[in-house]
Image (cartoon, rainbow, N blue to C red):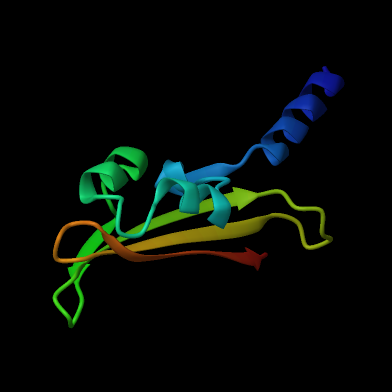
Length: 111
């Protein structure tokens, strides 16, 4: 019974808790840059690949900006224990509806 309990504890520690957009989980800049092509990708293709954005806004120049956020708790091999990994993807569409620019980033906070 103790072995089963410890197996469950290890499994719980190894798995991660994911919030927000699961399409960003475990993605890298290279993964994103293969899916989003400046001047070619459209709102429809971004919507199909990443789902509905977390937020939509207009820039001062009148371009549409979509933002995606993901937050997950991951086990990392550091003495401080698990880390919260916050991932963001911002996509700016030109007036023709194609991607003008995008940025992708990840922030880790250790608890």
